[in-house]
Each structure stands twice: as C-alpha cells, then as structure tokens.
Amino acid sequence: MTTSDDILRQAQQQTGLSDIDSDSWRAGLDVILDLARDPRMSDAGVASVHKRAVDALANRLRVHAYVTEHPEVREEQIERPLFILGMPRTGTTAVSYLLGQDPARRSLLKWEAQHSAPPATPATWRTDPRCLAMLAEEKKILEAVQQHGISLAHWEDADGPTECMFLHDQDFKGLLWDSFTPGTGYADWMFNECDVSSAYQYQKLVLQVLQSGVPGRWSLKMPSHSVHLEALLNVFPDARLVWAHRDPYKATGSLCNLLMLPASMTLKPEAVDKAALGQNCKRQMREHVMRPLAVRERIGDEQFFDLHYAAFLRDPMGQMRRLYEWDGVPFSAEIEAGMRAWLDANPQHKLGKAKYTLEEYGLSVAELEPVFREYLAAFDIELEG
Image 1 (cartoon, rainbow, N blue to C red):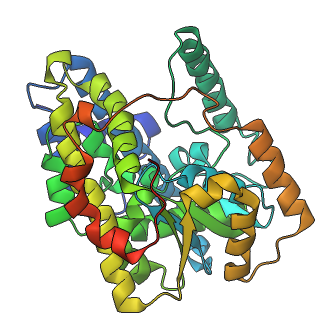
Image 2: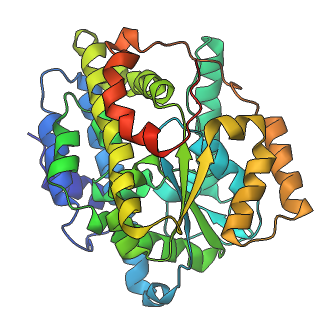
Image 3: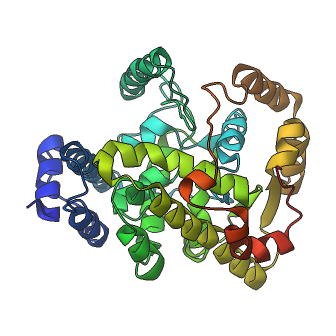
C-alpha cells in the first residue's frame, strides 16, 4: 500500500534532495492516495496518480532547496497581481493568453509551474531546455490527437500561460485531483474540511522564485480561485479579480464534457458514470458561483471586473480595452497588435469542436435553474440558447 512517505521518498530519489519545507501537503496527499485504492481505479490510473504526486513533490523539493540557497527571493514584492477566475469553461484560458501578449505582464508558464527552480532568465524564459523538452512531448501528443481525429476541449502550450492549479497541486489542494479519482471524496474534503491557506502561501513563494528570474506584474488564472477567494485575499490583499461570466447551463455541460477525459484515463471503463459526473459538476459549479457572490457582498465591487463570455466572443479587443481601463493600465497599439496576432493564430475550435448535451450527463436546465438562480439574478448573463 503506497503511503505519502513512499511518494516523498520517490520524489527525493528523483531529485537527489531530502529536505522539504513543511508537512502542509500531507493531508491532501493522504486523501488522494486513499481514493486511488478504490477498486474502480484502473492499474494505469493508479500509476498515473502516483506519478503526478511524485512529480508534484519533486518540484516542491526543488523550490525549497532553491529558496534555502537564495533566501533573498522571499523579499520579492508581488504587487497588484491580477487573478482571472469564475466557473470553469468561461473563456479564462483565452483571456490569460491575451494578457500574456503584454510584455509588461508576467504569466505563469506551463513548463515553469512544473519546473520552478532554478528560475529562467528573460533570455531563456521560452528557450530553457525544460521548456523545449515539454514542447517536444506536446508536439507528439498533438500529432497523435490529430491523427485519430480527436477534438480537444482544452489545451495549453508548454510555453504559454497555465493555471495556478498546478502550483496548488504541489500542496495537494487543487480540484484537478478530483478529476483523477472516483466519486466525490476529494471534492467533499476540499469544500468541507480543507484549509487552502497553505496552498496560497506556497503559490506566493513560487511566484517570488520565478519573479526573481523574470520580473513583471503577474496575470494569473484558475477558475477555482472563485471557491477560495477569502484565502486568496489573505495572501494577496491587493489582488485584482477578473470574474469571467458565461451562461451557466452551457458552462456546466462543457465542464462535464471536459472531465470525461481524465475520468476515462484513470477509471476502469465500466466505472465511468456520466450521471454521477454530472451531479459532481453541478455541485462544483454551485460552489464556483455562490462562494464568490458571498465574498463580493462582503468586500464590495472595487476589486472585481466582470468579463462576459458572450461579449468577449463578439468583441475581444473591446473587452480587453475595458479591462485595461479598469486596471488603470494604458492599452497601447503594441499590446493590441500582439493580442490580435494571437487571436488570428488561435481561432475558436482550433483543435476541434466538442459535441455534448446536459442530458447525456443526467442533467437538465430545469434541474440546474435553482442552482444558478442567485447568480443569474446578480448578473446580466446572456444565455446561449
């Protein structure tokens, strides 16, 4: 039976490092390992979860070793970071990529979220061997996907912006782990028992390490920041919050469709239950709207910018200008040109258009109406038919 100590030993062997900063990661990993013993997990799924856990702790070991050798990174100031949040499947990835075209902003790149120390330099930010190796792996995956005619609902390039989730995963406090384990045990723990403060403290430390190499004002994104806004604001009190809004019925169906892939990768085929997945998504989406509504009622509107998916699709540059005006930053011709170039190179459905319905996940608009009633009453959301 694999334990959290076994995972730590494997990470130590992988890195050649022994010291780790704290035990804050252990509680979440214990939950994950317990769920990975469920008979619904496939052998390949168990191996995948264990490998992800080892890799997560390996990066944490490297970060701790680097900070031990370079304690001055703790003095790095993270000022007015911008966090994109909202329900999953609301266009947050596209917005983060557009912000990434601004040379004054600092994105968390996918490769460096997983290989954070030592940090890159401005000259090697996208040419570091760790980045190039991940790009080569991704190229093979995309070639296989295209060869088999598979549509991808979500994709991130190794040298492009990624989600803060991959840092929170290294404290084993991120909903991504829920998508790789059966049932709702991990989500239950996250929503009802888990204190995510240590995940945000760890994230801040990693950002300080990365910023010491490549400076800039942070633009970050993770839909489930919505669920943890109190903890986020305790660690980043001057955060700017971009709340992405979309038709919640459409977003819920899209999330169900997205989560089918990790479920099919880690569960035995007969254990994949679309109706159960639909109920889990319904519960998670409610948390993604009700929790930020409560925080916003407490702190007011000043730190929030509302970005609507439908308006963004119609006029992305118009919405980005509004965002920059709210943020108090000039929207230069250079920034706009970079964003337009990215949009031209990355049209919607570039990697295929997914086909799904709420009904195939045992859901309906009628069932979801009470879940989203308060959210739809608070915002003028354009429904998608």
